[in-house]
Amino acid sequence: MKKSLLIKSGKAILIVLGTGFLSLLVWANWNARTYTEKLVGNTQFITYDLSNASALNPLLLEKRISVIDGVSSCSVNGATKIAGVIFYTSKLTPGELQSKLKNTLGYAVSEKILPIQKGGCPVGGIRYFMLGLKEALCFRS
Amino acid sequence: MKKITLMLAATGIVAALFTTACKKKTETVTETVYVDKTPDPGPPTLYTRLGGVSAITLVTDKFINNCATNSFIGPRFSATASDANRLRVFRFNLIDQICAGSGGPCQYKGVTMLQAHTGMNITGPEFDTLVNQLVKAMTFYNVPAKEQGDLAAILLPMKTDIVGH
Image: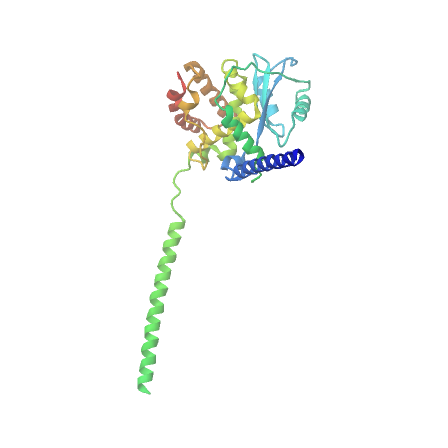
């Protein structure tokens, strides 16, 4: 009796979870991707410590790093000796980027976490978590 | 026999007239369609002059990067930029906003500037630094001065909704 109740409960839970997942899949794929989403790839932002550099010419460094294949942009802060790099995740991994930076600059660079002010730009919270989930489950081109 | 010949002749004339009339009508329609297909495109939009979505994406990425690494306003951006999901939403919103504002085919889907910045207490100097970072980004990619001015004219009126809330 107990075993059959357990099996029934298990089946009910599986049905509920399966229906929930299917609903999420339908919701994530309901609308076609926007013009921007279709044309612009996803990126990642990493900051690097450039204190190993003997002489720092921010503009020159920005130009040299920006042309690395897969890098979308680079900004160098000469005062804090930090380089911010935005790169396409479909073309580079963080490890590959670090290796390419070493080849381009001639010295090893390490990641540096920037000071963060609580809050920041208002793109967080449950609404943006759901948007991230939608992106992960969307397989429409 | 004469009647039949006359009837045939009359039918022929009517048919000929009908065909000619129809032919003229078709020619007129074709001409009208041709005119409609080539309307005067007018001056190119700012979106086109900037170089489309790919150029806007380059400038946007450089702008975000400039802001995040800036000593003064960086801390306001670094939390967003360092989180891949938040960066994605923020970046696409910015691209959509510039693209739509400059006459491109995108649609901005984010909240209003006032809603987005209420509670952040952004100061005038912070906003000015942000504008400087945008100008630096456009200069880096050699955006001509006229296009820089036109884009600034679209974005600067948002200052009242961004500062002091």
